[in-house]
Length: 107
Ligand SMILES: [Zn+2]
Image 1 (cartoon, rainbow, N blue to C red):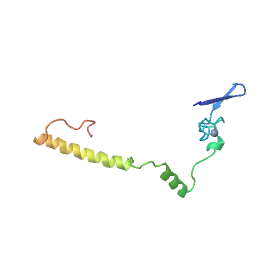
Image 2: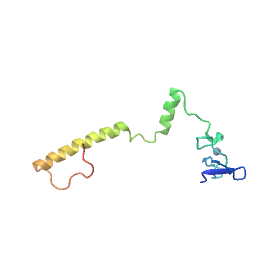
Image 3: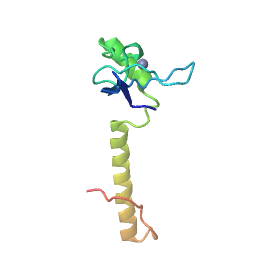
Image 4: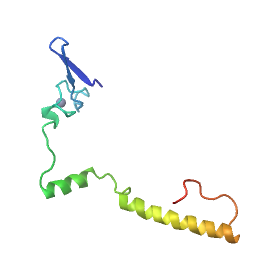
């Protein structure tokens, strides 16, 4: 995929639109809008959703699965902290032997 486009006999170098044609499977040959990666016909002029409804709808569409969230990571981190504490207690009292859970220890 070409990142740059040379115009005016190679004197001007600009960012090339990185949209791919569904029909011909080739890269768009238009220059991208300044500061963007797409040309005006492939969404370069888009400024994103404006209304709350549009923002919610965009978030729903762009959420692939929703399994990995900040809240989910925090809950999992707390669960792992409790599990490590139980493991430490088990090792200390002699209930558990062998290797401990690998990885970084909680602060
Ligand atoms: Zn384009």
